[in-house]
Length: 257
Image (cartoon, rainbow, N blue to C red; front, side, top):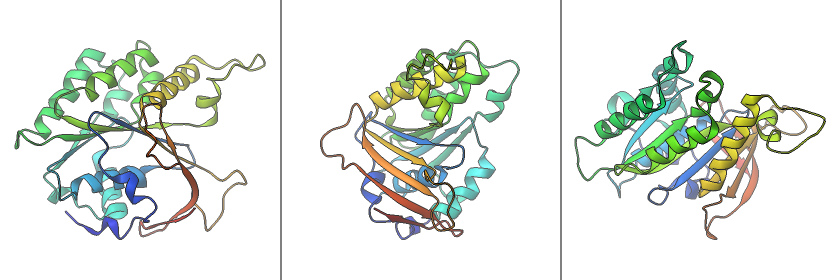
């Protein structure tokens, strides 16, 4: 475990990385050309390095394997997960690509078992649950709708060993615009379900952090735009702002508000 993530994180971002209130949800959205993995890694590092709590971290990913996250956490947050017993990982990438997808009940059981294992060594420990791209199930599993997926997330968030939840999901144009009626464009079923899911989670979240490309296109000295807004379940203490950011090759981040 390393404690250098604070040195790699802009001061403007640090307040949002503190552990959220119990059973709360933080929504993290990104686009195809603008990854939010650097933010996910910093949330994990903040929980791991928090001296005031005994929080474990369970990262459940439908999109990326453990090899990817080992590299990302080391580069972006200075965390060596092989030396971090409080970090746990559940790989569901193969599940999302399987021609015989797991049922929702079996999926819930698998994740709740992982939650229990993440807190098994200490009964006072609670878990920061990070769900990376569960919305992929909307495209790969016909029986899973936005409502079914939202109900699954609510059940996981309500688990007695879960402190709070971080959810990452795409917010590319088609997935967001499908929530707005347009008589000239008919969204696909996947786009409609994805849009509905994103809207549902934004209403349930206390805070929404979004990263996207510049409206003017790519730039060498800017990686994208970071926006922080209050979610539907947020309070007045959430400071909303927007700024440009640059992720360096060494994993460091600079933000210009």
